[in-house]
Amino acid sequence: MKLIFGHSEAVARFVADMTPGCETGFGKCQAIGVGDDETGELVAGMVFHDFQPGPGLIQISSASKTARWLTVDVRHIMFSYPFDQIGCQMVVLQVSAKNERMVRIAKAFGFTPYLIKRMRGRDEDGYVFTLTEEDWRNGRFTRKTNG
Image (tube, rainbow, N blue to C red; front, top):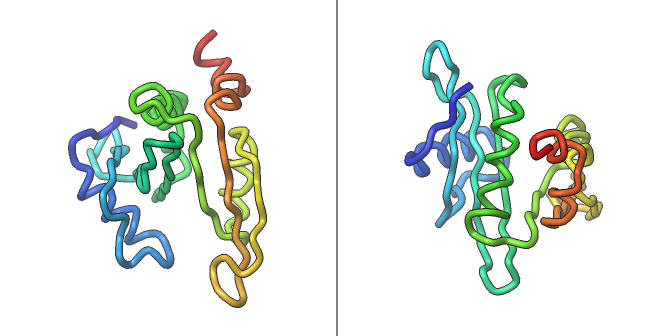
């Protein structure tokens, strides 16, 4: 997998098109794509949006066509951008409670879950996950990357 920088608009559209309820896109954002090494095809993307510099918050949304995209290098860049490059102290992630795979991944990454009834509509609950800089830096995935 190779990282794709400088194509925020195309990557954000890719993620929005694969994300239910995101028909209007993300607005002002930065995005990083993940391309297949062999074909160069965009197979995943991460969108950083709703940046609030005052409290140091940013939201992240992602989507992929393959489970193979979330490599060690991709994970490092995914959180290096908000924490190291723009100085955030917290990343926020919203996930449908029906998306059991993403709920499991977020918890494994060290995000703290908050279940919100009807967040995705009358018949669908959702989670708001938060990840502080300290939780990320002390998490099991980061320790492997940083020694």
